[in-house]
Amino acid sequence: MEGGISIRARSHDQVRQSKGKRKRAVNSAPYGYAFSQSRLVQNPVEMDALALIYRLWTQDLGQTEIATRLNRMKIRPRRAESWTQPVILYLIRRFQSDSNFLQEVKRWTQ
Image (cartoon, rainbow, N blue to C red; front, side, top):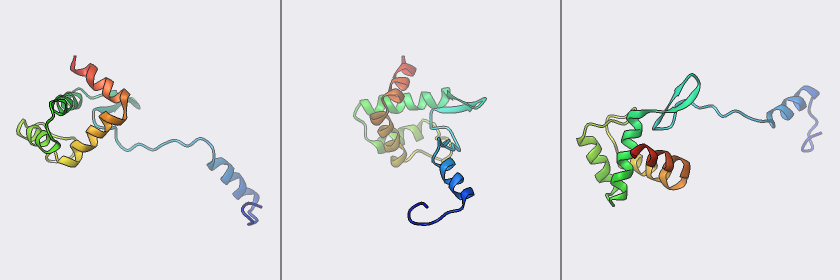
């Protein structure tokens, strides 16, 4: 019995297996990266864009201004037609929350 409900033996095995280690399905690589032979590698074009975004952000430009500059420079995001403030905000939050990501972007600029 589990949770007061009697379950079949096969169902119990399925529940036990589902509690095991789960693989996370990834549909696409995060911006700045690409898959190569099932491995995550840096995408040079996107890393250049991330380095520019980081540089503009550290110069105290706002998200909308950063998006406008990227669009004027004809630097395109991976899927959208143009950069938008919410996308820039998302990337800035990645800089702030993921120190490994930030270090990779900083190393790219050197």
